[in-house]
Image 1 (tube, rainbow, N blue to C red):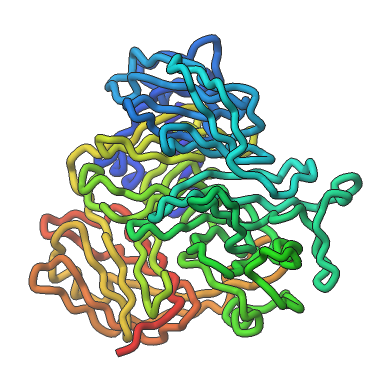
Image 2 (cartoon, helix red, strand yellow; image 1 turned 60 degrees about the horizontal axis):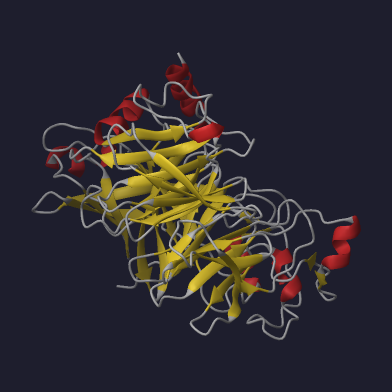
Length: 516
């Protein structure tokens, strides 16, 4: 009954059929390593609880050099888990490595030590006598503001392609009273926040913490793509129309205006922002605010999640299925994972997002790829609302070896899109224009909470040309619009053996239309 309830709730908040839900499990199987006592359907009879009622509210994960899994939990501890690859996971062992941390929301094995972002600093944990207990808690970096507001989370670190470490800092919401005595005010714009709140920061090889980019609301996930460039996810809220994925680079401003409270600091890479207009369609706002940059990908609300979290690059070389080189993004509210294809047009990232997998036991906060290609998923709903039967835990997603019928890539073209599939298509269904429906929309850039889809338009697919190998289709589309999300529904597509697409919906953020 509880599993049925999960399915019903999932159907209520996202466009996925019961067939799709069952099909996801056929291709990607969930194994519960540990979940909270509230969960019964999400674990097998072989599941073994953590010792002494340990609440694995996972905020950070990484593997040690010897293959054990290190996890940071909400309680402020770091634990080592051994046996997490076992199937079934009946003999997982636990050892506490560190304690007394302040809500750690990241963990990284870096240069032989563990690095963790706490509320007020980036901490380096060292075990000097090899007894699996941290002896030294060293400050690796600090310097951002902490007013005491509950929303001032710090995430990370994650490593980019150059080996530099990145962290992201939440904005404070509705600061008042004593909190306002510890803010950085911006007299010209009127914004007040703790120093560097709403910023992405980088720790370079010289141990210096640098502010890089601003405008973040709740940047719960960050990670590098296969080129080594760093990205973060944001969650819908004030100034943030819906969940989004952004390429972090120097001097970029994304959307949350209150982060601009820190631009008066001498080390700020952003200068001379005199006003931030509110209440404009995003394409118009981008013309009026020179520093503003659009997201690489928008996640339309409820259609592709409600609270985006961690980023995982599939670097498995095919061990996790056909999606090697793509990004996977955690989803908190719907207890799922979505998938992202990125490409660069005129030097800027853009791309498409796709539903991937629902049915996790609780809110998905952290993602990590194992040595065998499987995805380790750290769960915690922190008392907030999410689907699932548990409050926290650790699960593992394993590819079964079967290749689902999916849109692998959606590439922008001067007059439409090229769709690449995981399996050869039936040419008759792929060439049939009735197999496709397309529409586009944008969002309102304003200080209020979220945005409806605005300036909607139906688009006409005028031709569909199937490639000789039947692995791709070139769609010509009338009415393409830059800086709009282009929504595709391809329910009529069939594989050569008659299978429909497991997920027929795709959402491409068309920041730039390629030139001829």
